[in-house]
Every structure is written in C-alpha cells, then in structure tokens.
Length: 136
Image: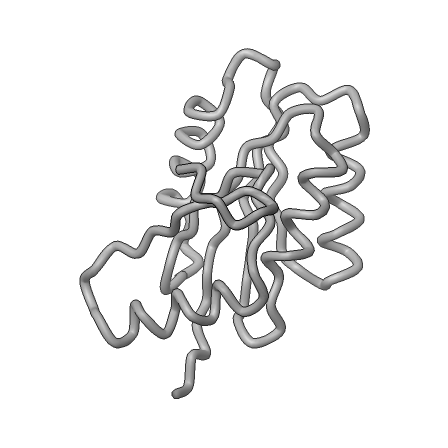
C-alpha cells in the first residue's frame, strides 16, 4: 500500500534534551514526509540546539517556538496547534507526541496505513514501559 503522506508532528518539550532526541530519532521515517512544530518551553539544557541539529541533519522542516517555562504540556500543544491551524501548508495528518516516548520501528507507517484504510477515524496509541507493560 502506498502510504506517501505528509504528517505534521506537534510536540512540547522542556529540559529533556536526551529524551527528546531519542523520541525524534525513533519517530522519524524516510517513507513519510514529516514536518515539525515544536514548543521548547524555556529549556536551559540545550534542547533547542538538539532540535535544530536534528532538523538540519534529517533535512526536516521544523518550526521551533519558544515558551517562557509556564506553558507546560497543554499550553505548549495549544500554541503549536494554533500555528498548525494557521498554516497554508497542507498536511494529511497531525500527530501529537509526548517528547518522552520512544516509538517502535515503523509505528508511524502503520498508523498512516490504518488511517488510509479507515478514513475519518482518529488513531491513537498506548504506551508501555521497557518491559512491555502498558503504562497508559
């Protein structure tokens, strides 16, 4: 099945540069055109540099927004969603991501395939710990 799609990844992060990098690396796919809207909510640990480096290395479009440390996850996601909604650039899907999640290989491709086969549905995924135990 052809899954050539464009996905806008929306993420908020703060002072978890290593976890954020692992998340981005596990999420990225050459099979799908991905662009990112990321809110760095006042990090002081180099998170913004990690994000810029990732985007440059992977040749990904990334809009990096800066928060004041008081947005937290929901405020950052709301800010990023407002940017996404105001864009003229078209996207097939929007994926909201927690920056401390590492994705199994080809997860995004499987989600897109499910979305193509089930138009109009919202696809969500559960998370699990390193032992495979569902966390939420």
